[in-house]
Image 1 (cartoon, protein in one colour):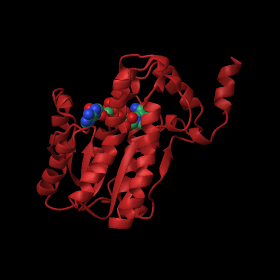
Image 2 (cartoon, rainbow, N blue to C red):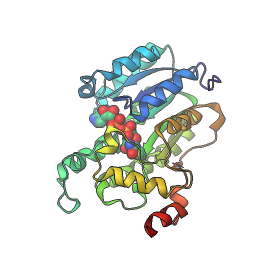
Image 3 (tube, protein in one colour):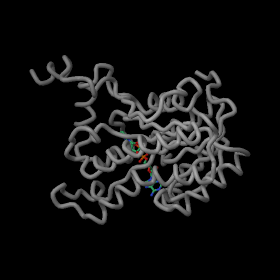
Image 4 (cartoon, protein in one colour):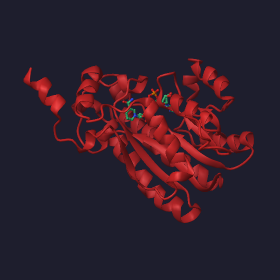
Length: 270
Ligand SMILES: NC(=O)c1ccc[n+]([C@@H]2O[C@H](COP(=O)([O-])OP(=O)(O)OC[C@H]3O[C@@H](n4cnc5c(N)ncnc54)[C@H](O)[C@@H]3O)[C@@H](O)[C@H]2O)c1
């Protein structure tokens, strides 16, 4: 469904690791809607090589950046405006990683250095990106910056561990920086809280397949897919959502407003 919603818009899309990545789908849909953009990921993720296929499909250049490094982010934003030939209209932050989750650490026995790493990669990097964008005056007025979040910021999901704290901070940064960026540059900042999705980051969480089934049954519309999430990101980058800012937007098929659903009751009766 190409209707040129992003025609003439320039952006940065982070976090496309492989075909399952939410950012991968965002890149394909943004291209379809007429955007031009730079792809970025951590230098270590480049070694997998898949991002080169995506870049070829989208006619996009890749600028590697470790999202915890301000120096890398400065290079990312200055190179991107140079490559794309002007200021940016959208930025996607699609970055998350917890060494504690990855290494199966119990929540009562967290490695605190790793916890700081989780928060740096998954939340503070969002602040770093926006601070660099502001300092370089890299965003056009009415630009849109989106990060991906998860409902563990508000409710407990035990296996999500310290990522819950990272997401709570991410959403808080969206509000605080959203206020600042709106006032200074008329740029909007939001988080999209996505259903559980089968990706590398998602499947790192323990018992994910059981959990994804539970979430699906608890969502009247079912779990939102990565493709649907990409559509929502595109709409948030478009001019149709210019007055939406400082929000955490639920994209979850109704999960967050459900107490229980008939489908779940039916399953529990069995
Ligand atoms: N999959 C889910 O269930 C789900 C649900 C809600 C929100 N999210 C969020 O969506 C976002 C994208 O995750 P995904 O599910 O597409 O998984 P993914 O594993 O495909 O993407 C995560 C990305 O983060 C990148 N990354 C990790 N450390 C980095 C660093 N230091 N610098 C730069 N990039 C780094 C990885 O290389 C990878 O591309 C994450 O913020 C994730 O928390 C995922």
